[in-house]
Image (tube, rainbow, N blue to C red; front, side):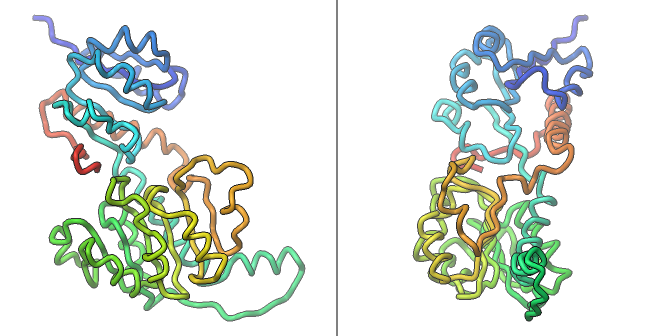
Length: 323
């Protein structure tokens, strides 16, 4: 008896080294890897599964011909670029890489808190200038970290912050899901955003990109922060109103900010954020650990095994909620 093969279409450069494990899959899986529209259009009618890595415009272009498609996996955690109306309306299951890079992102959050507590920019500047300039530093023990978007990455931040003795607040759309979480001192709903922000010394954004989170930290929210508070964004760039943040930073309305994500990436040359002194600017590398692409691919492969066995997939995205 001939076993039906699972046909997988991968939208990416077929020469990418990290895709090598795909070529070692069992014969029950048929793999096509391409970033050429003509090849993708020819292969997509038979695809049961699509792994999208490269330009999301390619996915949208071939989706109308994906007659057999049952499952689409996003190589990244963010899915806003693939949530086009046709996909949302379809029965195709969407999964993502949510949580795969949570440990590295959480380390960036703690690094950012320590960066400002110890004023590392001043320390390095003094060293480079040959200046023996002593100054007082802070401890983060006892400080309040308010985490907006208390999902897997948000909870990973709490796991690292707890041993430092920080007070931890979490905010999420469904706060009842985190009631009783031993890491949190208090749980907030989205309607309590201003209250939590006003109480926090470090405001961490780990929220997904949805209509509700667009410019979530705007003029009002940033102005509600303590004068000595720091904003840290490891979620999505569109959650912050850049213009409002720049005004707050340059006017010393808040102590500082650490950003790993931006609404426009890469930031164009001459962007005002490059010149802000009380900003730690990371070019979206907080999750670029050695082998990060391999980690994401392995998550897909684990899910593919579940798919072939008829088991529930991990990281299923609510296509209407956007995460």
